[in-house]
Image (cartoon, rainbow, N blue to C red; front, side, top):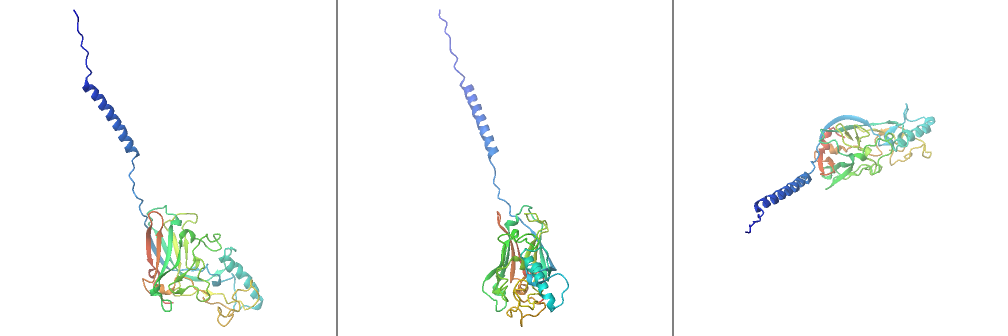
Length: 314
């Protein structure tokens, strides 16, 4: 008698459950990997800052050696015995100081100044190389004969290139900005020496920390204001005609010194520096733009020069 045996068929439900478990585990692993490697991109936030204005100041005009006399007490017109001595010291303390070839400043005349102070920065990581200064002039508001139907840029440059103090902090940075025209007004119309000269005749950036490469709360833009006062000019002091140095290069130049050599200081006659007085006659005449050129770039502030000091006349 044969005994029949029956093979047990595999439970298809059990196999399906095993396969489903394996697939679910694989999906879980893949999903976890995606979650760990997936990042949501959020664009950087544009920085912000506030500005505080302080007017009524006065600072030496370091950028103009002709507005400087040597240290000491001098009587004008100079006695013949002091003429050469005065000239030698003027070159060292005034001309060479402004070119950063001499470290002792002479007695520079002062000019009215206003301060633009940075405050409430949203970030302490804004490189000075990414902060741009622009002084824009609307030629329509320039007085005759300087009126022009266009805007001009008197000065533009980064704060990193505008931190030099003549005779104090090495040479001016490479690429330091230079002056242009304001409307149809040439800053060097008297003697043709301001156009193309360094920014120091208009503004200097004064960082709170000299070694910092980033913008800080309390950093200052010092703006010279040619409004309501003129510095004394010493371009026409020397009476001798001997060669320079020690004689000043303008000796016996009647085009610069009225009636020839005067033998004493005059009001600033050889060139012009500071924000022009007509910038204070209309709020639309002249504007200072502070621009962040990093990513994302943004206009940090647009400041009417008119607001930096009240009109007082020329």
